[in-house]
Amino acid sequence: MLRFSIGVITVCFLLTACNESVQVSDSALVVKPKPQKLSDLPVPSADPKALLGSQLFFDVNLSKERNQSCATCHDIANGFVDKRNDVLSGAVSLGSDGHSIGTRNTPTAAYAAFSPPFHRMVNGEYRGGQFLDGRESGLAEQATGPFVNAVEMALPDGAGVVARVKENTRYENLFNELYGEDILEDDVKGYAAIADAIATFEKTALFMPFDSRYDRALRGEIRLTPEEELGKTLFFSQQFTNCNACHQLNASPFYEQETFTNYEYRNIGVPANAAVTARNGGFIDNGLLDNPAINDPKHAGKFKVPTLRNVAVTGPYMHNGVFQDLRTVIMFYDKYNNPSRTINPETGLPWAEPEVATNIDMENLEIGPALPDQRVDAIVAFLKTLTDKRYEHLLETE
Image (cartoon, rainbow, N blue to C red; front, top):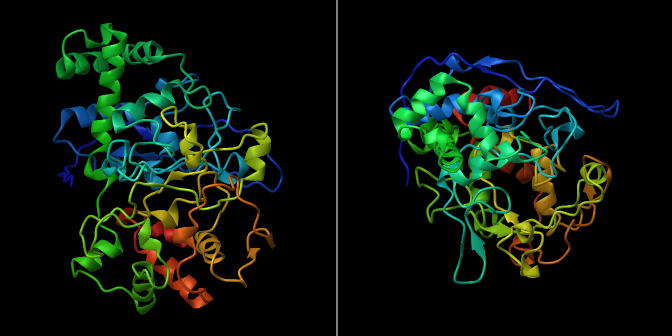
């Protein structure tokens, strides 16, 4: 497993979100995150490439309208997810042009370095990679995507990103020093170096501190409450919930660097987000099948199992942000085994049909007894203990 040391330096950049917004319904919540100085937070200094990557990560000039950075959609103050609620209650993100939106909820960049390269397992299933469909194998490859995505940062190509970086003489000097003289004169090598620097930053302890209440309890520093302990027992029990069939990487619940995902792909029957689908012309998200390397229909509707680290403060949930509340997610899982769990509490209507009704993982979903509300609450309480220490204050507002 990866281990990193952390130092403290001062970096004079502002953590900001995109100031553009779009017209939404009157009922939509529009919230602008308060800008925060990166210098208020610890940044690893041991690796100069990581420091360079941190500067690129926060640089809004690397987007079409010079208003959006990696940190806009992966907000360091909010669990590395997009907490702008400009569009469809935050289900998807707004692009640099101020009107384009994506089709998927922004996944957290925290703990992403632990995902193995995308690969096919002996059972024919797939594991690892980046993005919800694994279409990029590693962090550096993933870092190249948003810059040139037409509905995200929207620069024309890698050469355009390199050109923006070269506008900053300090960047150019650092790249020459760290990656070789005139590295940015070659657009292909220069773009790869930019991505590598960002990936190096994402491999630092800033992204994966392992200091949640769960971790501190594991180290004997604190004790979980009785409700949290009950939730922990339920979570790791194959008899009562089977949560750990997908959300446990290591064989023991006492492993000190558990990431709470096996990095595999599952279709759990998530309904379409009707508002997102309508805004994107009726688009149906086939998940893993949309990965250019995959053409077998048996993978339609499968998405990468997300980490549960910081899950209580990184909603909305599911690949399309269809659920706003973490408790709703637990109730959604429970509906497969609980005949009384027929109503989506967020809509007051019966659960909608799956977006992709084939390949649903009933083998794992239909294991365990129905959960009474007390046990649902206990599982939610346990999941809150997976919140990194610096985000625990956010639990009060979720």
